Length: 236
Image: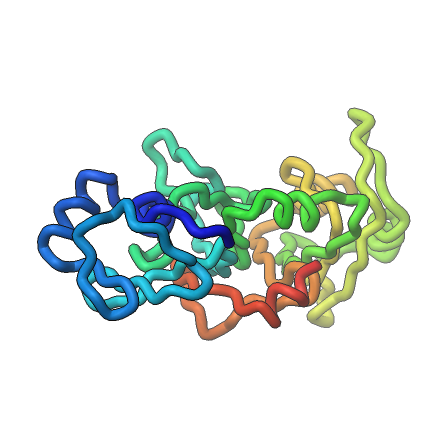
């Protein structure tokens, strides 16, 4: 990360305006390598310098990668237009400008949402050609028949011409009403439409894994945390 002005760096890492940052600096709330800073034009190296705001370390990494356990009723968007978004669930310590959800879950779908400000990384894991699998647990209103499973595993084409790539399925109960399904696309209502095509309605849907990284079950719905570098390497 190239050195940049402290105010510019902080405006990316904190949900504060430039005027609010100046006010905080005058109050002695911003320190650089242990010393209070009043001149926010000073150049800093986000990788080497220690920046604290009100006694708490500011995460100055170039990009953030966040795991969120999404609850129902929240949309995957940066602007909810009056509705609560996944970004609204983030704590102040995790918020910064430029964050967005990498891929979407339906409003009533729960589970793993990756939030980042790294556009290249997001594109890489979302592109079907890169075959980054996403794993879901689907509860169905009725058992899925063997022929339906075969159709989905071979790739299915809907009556409207929409094509879905082959999926991997595994029944998680004897009744075959709870199914683990792995896909590498992200088309609109994809899993619900796939199961509907073979005569089943999805009643509950949760995303549990992106790539090789599983949702942290210590995260309650609505909670989020940073993804470590080791965990990030498991995604793509």
